Image (cartoon, rainbow, N blue to C red):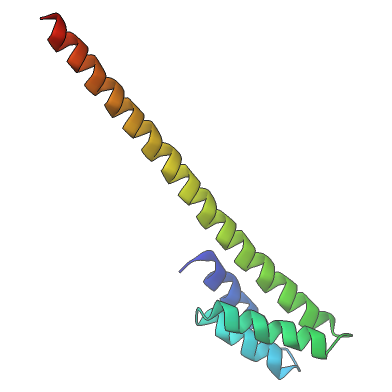
Length: 105
């Protein structure tokens, strides 16, 4: 279970106290891994209930969790690329060193 699902599950538990069906529906969608749909429903709930701190808070919390997950995935991708580049450079260096040693023999 990734971080987004974990946060969505926590929000779903809290949603049991809500009086706004859209919030409950959006959090349920997030818990099911339907990120785009869940965020859209929560955004609509916040827009349709502008005075509801609950609707705004649910949307902002879910949006932040999704952004953090995406940024974490991007950082992992960058790290893997960096590590892969280092390995390739090291292998090229070693291959070049072996060629130089063979030519000297």
